[in-house]
Length: 253
Image: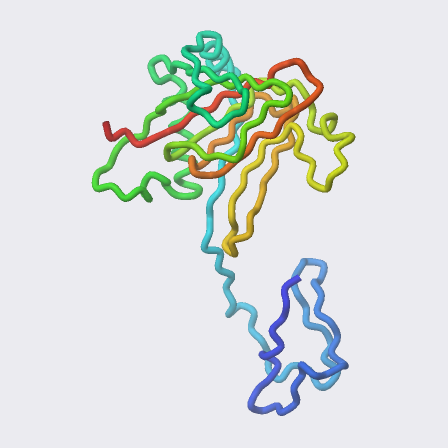
């Protein structure tokens, strides 16, 4: 509930300070969630207050996209995983996670999946590439993408990616968040979760948590590369959690 500034109850035509009145009922929202200022028993408001003259301002408008891959897209990603290339773990932040580079033949995934998401992100939140201080215009391209095999106890600490946009695809989630946290006695369970972390406009650290399970398989998150995120471990399961990640850069080569 918002705090009401009682200074507006003072006027040159009214010498009584309503802030000191003990007869003033509390404010509360009505059924529509609109704040009503109730029954000032000492004579009502000094003047009418036009709520239409007040405009809310939200300067920060950023976020990410959730996308459910089609069966064709999923098949292509799995086929790319089966043909994985060289080991890539030594260039990534993951602890004990095995990662391998993938190849996007004829830029199929970039052109058919990532380019539309770049356009959607731009129309929703603004073109992130336009904020980069460079003199020329450059096209986007997928710099690298890779597959991650995460075993129980493995984790990915808080990190961000190199690029303008990045993505993660959950291909295989062998466990359920609810099962992983049954005996986790905490007010912020995180086993088997993916978490974005960011500061709000007041500088307070905020978290957005995805509680992962089998229903998330085939889901992609598309987000600004600088957005910090963390991958929490899972336990008591011998199957791998399989994900694919990648980065999109401006092609100034």
